[in-house]
Length: 448
Image (cartoon, rainbow, N blue to C red; front, top):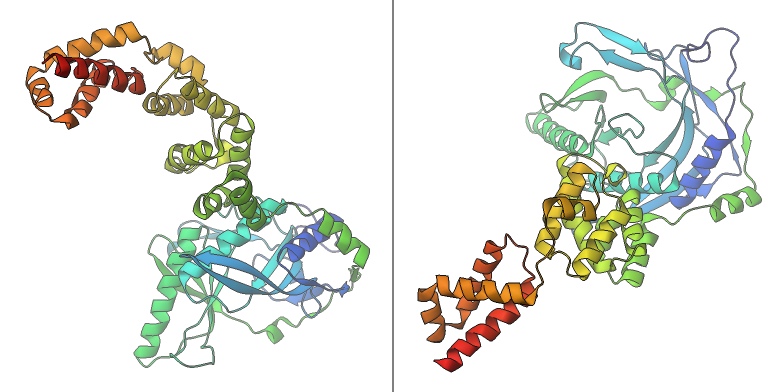
């Protein structure tokens, strides 16, 4: 910690220009209207994690307002309003000796105090936990694509608080709301919202009243619990911060920031559909994570067809990554290595089936496809003479099936193919096996 973190007498805040640029990027990506003049305010409240007794934020004149993003859930698209985007400073962090409800001691970590934050306030357009999950995922994708946040909820880089209220069917007035905190993953967000909605409905159905309060999600119990009463805006006694001058944003600055915006998830998805011929679903999966989208394009750039790369990444690669809760950023198989695996399939060096075995070994060991194939002796058997010899052996070893085949049961061809592949541990070229078996069995039929 430092004197600024602890709010020691005499310290003054300094505005970081990069923070304003990040906030402007975000506001433009969220289709917001940028204020030409915005002002910082002091938000006054007392809590152990706030050493100054106030938090620098924005209130009456935020940086941006009136935006929206589009989410998609079960094939249906919906616009979610963004009320405002504003900048503020972070508070400290309370650390409990156990789960909050059972903790004997609570400690205060001031290391992140004063670190710049950007708060995005959504309109009350979300109706279900699933919609909220889709919204946060889409928002996270945009922030990661912009490079303003790494999107890590577990480490607190991306945090989400949720206001929850229920109302009678047909009613236009919102009910009393509670604010939920401590939801550090998409799964916990949806679980917490589902529990809180059900809790409020039970309270009302039992003749009680929902209390406006801040509640904490307890992952261990799967419940929310009261933490403190929820203040209204006037309770914070907002007033302009005298230590920070207003921010003036002119059209040239906005234009400069707009021109620097990268390709965003929706734009990338449309390009993947148009340029690579991917389905909407495949393009959506690949672009939901910037690192995954970049990985896919690198595989294609290194010579693999787009459809093959898409299928392999979505089925083989994501299975391994998800099992270890890793992202494409942590993938031990480089795009160049995956493309080289495709080339080995294309050249018939290995079969598609052996390629899957090879890939798993590449993922676990970090070795190249060539190294794995050589060390494990997985190279595909494509020698005509050798396969012809194996064809004769397999047919002779199964006289009963041969008799049935010659009697007209042509489907038994698949049986003979399977036996030969088993005999070679899957290394024989399947196309060649099919061809040579057909030729041999046809000769036997004609000779009969």
